[in-house]
Length: 423
View 1 (tube, rainbow, N blue to C red):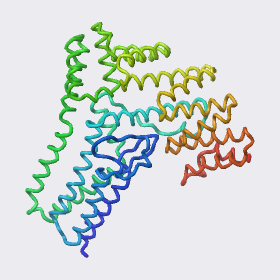
View 2 (cartoon, rainbow, N blue to C red):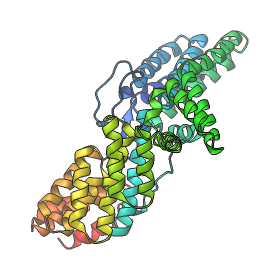
View 3 (cartoon, rainbow, N blue to C red):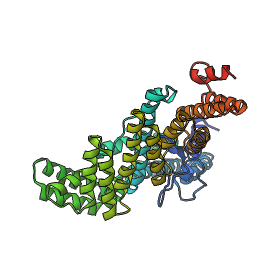
């Protein structure tokens, strides 16, 4: 077999492998593999690691393309290699553009996880001194289109990157071999890719244009035209309702116009209260927004965040029992958040409610795959078992904390090593 065929076959194997790797890296719950990254329909994050095979998914399609590429390498099909690479690129581009414009609610949920991770880092640094205090947390946002695009690029996983790279190299190899015969094929692809991206994103792009105009009008005090522009933006892309920054800006416009019977007006009021640390008033404002629209995603998210922030304020002031009450109530509003279980595990340990601390630690472990966060949760779990004089289980927990690091176990996680020495 010639070197060219070997390279083509290797690229086919890379494409097939990319279908099994992660296509979306959620900061706390782990990566969603390509075979579970659906190209249409719902994409829940609750079971990012254990999701079953989905036939119409990015990974499944790329895996099939990889198998066909390996078969094509045996017959030296130059044109087939070009279009197989093009297919992989189109699937990857569709996945990225779809996350940006077709499923922004998923992007918002993942960015919210990133904010949770930042909060855990701050809490760990101030009140525990574990390993999560030193973790790197990217600054992700969704306020502007450029912010959302940067977040998508950052969060797309290694499987997506491998599919893009293999697709590009397949096309380059085919063009190098058949540069005279594939001229029209290359032009067709260069026309097809923008058309596909436009079909996915045109409504979202128009909505972003309207929202940018609305921000400019509001900045100049022209609130009525700004209101109309924001509402047109939501008409073009109804999923903008998931964006907290736009809800805040629209709420400010409604408030300036005296239109206080909109959920966004109360969201804006709640946001102002949050900035001033007036958490009960913020919770009330978000509750009034939900009274007008019970399923408003931003109002629900912000009300939950207000309860979490109130708990942190209580904890920092030494009112641990009030902090526990706030965090336990926040858990009833969102059972999948991780930071509250982490905070509660530490608070229950502080108040000598060790069985409750064990329960919260195990719930947190069930929700997160982040190694640094898990290492600290295992430490809290071990401390609770140690206080109950269950030394064997405590030792297992401390050892599990160490095992979160495979290659650098001898250099970090000093806390777990120190605790193990006492058992």
